Image (cartoon, rainbow, N blue to C red):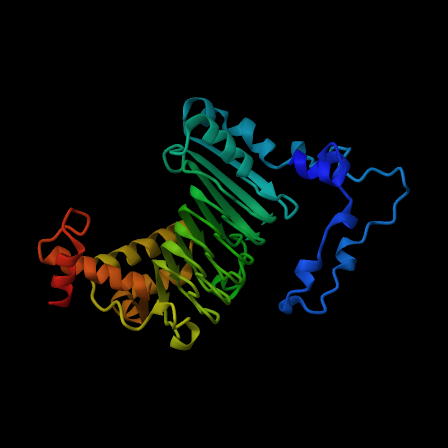
Length: 352
């Protein structure tokens, strides 16, 4: 770095910052893909007085001391200090962003990645949540919101539980109305999301382990999903499962034209029989969803479960479905797919 700086006539990085006139762009714009590209507007120096600094000389105030979580921390000290169960109730507004994130940080610093037993910290909020409600919360934190939320609910959630339901005084059908925004559960790794209502686009993008129940989604749901479980009880937008390589989804009355056919194996794996592990798992999730959110839709499906089950489709990524089938055949033939047997032996059974 010092050699480069010396060649440019500088002694430090601070001296070099802002000298965009020294950037050589010829090789970039001479490439045939960039023919005619004009980078001058990007590299133009701002019109500032000569003595104006070109680097950061002041500290930005992010006003973290006003973050909503500083209301929560005093209320949950018994849990943070002695792992005791605590409950709290507060109002919330849509200027309160990333609620629960600082709390999750405090919990992780004290108890590590394993967190605390599920629901140790049980927080009930009422109102409209701002962006990134419950982002990154670890196991041990449960956030229940009565109202609605903006985008990125449960972003990066890592073991916690988030429940979002309409206010109990609401009279509109929840399953026909929006409860949260776009990109719900982005990059989630573990935990649960129970959402009574419809959400926007890109639901569970890059989810690798969370279990989520929702009553309708927009376009591009389950995009790049690599693990976890999604239950969709209502309509789906287009391009379901693009780039999905792992995990499983249970979709009610799935329309085949809504899926990304290159990625998903839908229609090939239907739920038809009561008592199977998949059917039992799905039923248990609906029961939990109804209990936590008061979902009338889930209650109606459970009341006629033997018939409702026939309208669910289990969706798996094609390659993931093939791997599961190979493992099942190997296990049925007495081969441990995770043992020391060679893949050639497993393939013999599979192709047998």
